[in-house]
Length: 167
Image (cartoon, rainbow, N blue to C red; front, top):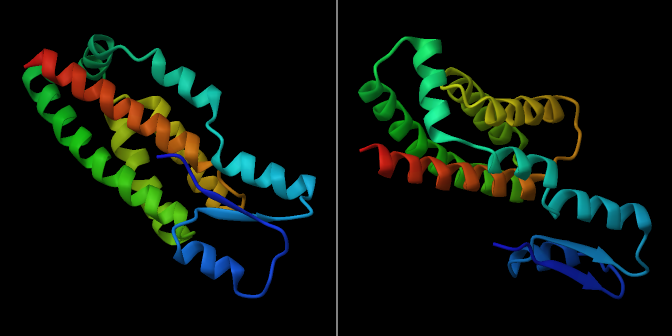
């Protein structure tokens, strides 16, 4: 879903809360300051770098990589990936909500959980994204979450397609 950013002629006390209460994801006040516009764009614009990594995803290569890493047979790997994909779907929604409400503790907890499970299942790109989120939370760095959620959703789609073909 595309973010909704309010643009207001002047910021009055209480505007921020009013905009969020009506379903806006963020707001920016006129006159627009370049730094504030950059913050909004960085936060909500999709990151092409992250999306390109997800596009190169190959389900069969992933299964082989897990097989080598964990020394498991294909049937167990498929069950693990199925459980992971279901969990990733729920966690993605929780992560998006935590980003929207700026719940840094939940963001850190979800990122930590997903980092570990992703790394175990050789989903190194997801693990790397989650590691970066953890570091950004620790260092109070604003996170470009729109691209992250889009990338996770792309992985979910690719994993679901691979799982359909594998069973």
